Length: 202
Image (cartoon, rainbow, N blue to C red):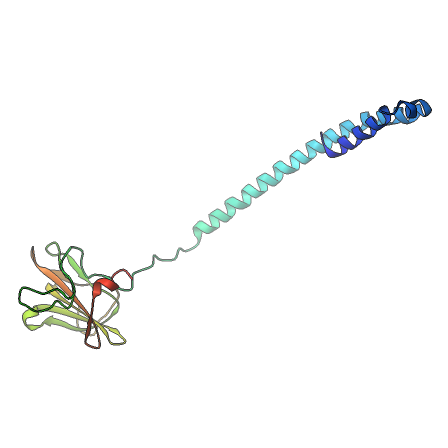
């Protein structure tokens, strides 16, 4: 029962519930009953009209939501966040920063056993300061990241960059050697070594 219909019902009930009033003025009771009978079809019409309006609003909202979803899908998506620093190659870490090496020296960075010929990437963006043979280290690439930070990547079988080239983190700078060979990365700031593992993924 709707609000207006309820109001008419209350009015009718008020008249019928007071017999004395009905006896004193029967015309008022009759008028109330007539009003009730006349109000009912109009209330039904209003109810139908409200239902139609509600259905229209639902369709309109659905259309708006679909339009927004379509427009959102067409918007360019932000690229996935790249880590500021990463390990240069995927593999098994066999030596960590600060561990003693078989030679008795202390490791200045992690050594990673990678699959033969795996691509080796720049740990972070910067400029190539060195790419070539470096004594007992073999083929080495040194990337200057700026603000005193450098990464020295050794254990390569060949390089893929030249001195002066600008690289981004993840760019291929060389390739790992044969099976069981190690790729080592040494992160330094103004010559002071830092543990690259604590920076990887940051």
